Length: 72
Image (cartoon, rainbow, N blue to C red; front, side, top):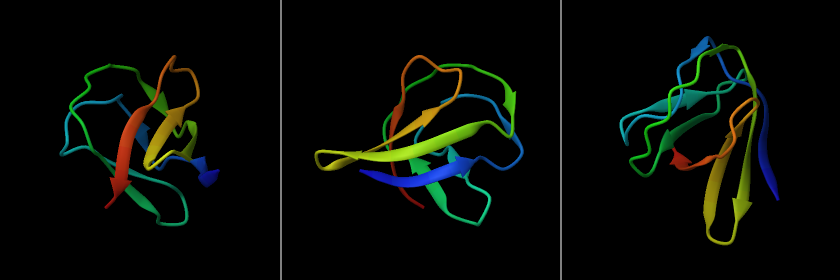
């Protein structure tokens, strides 16, 4: 099930730590829930948050895999 779909605000620099926050245009914010480091630079990339089982997973266009997130 798709929870959020659109563009991330500003410069995206990949996944880092549980302190990393992602904001969609429209104001919806998500925080990375697990440590997963993967650098990827994109300006305002398309992204979506999908619910998989009991977890939310953020997928970003151009990245091979997503990361588990939670509402910020």
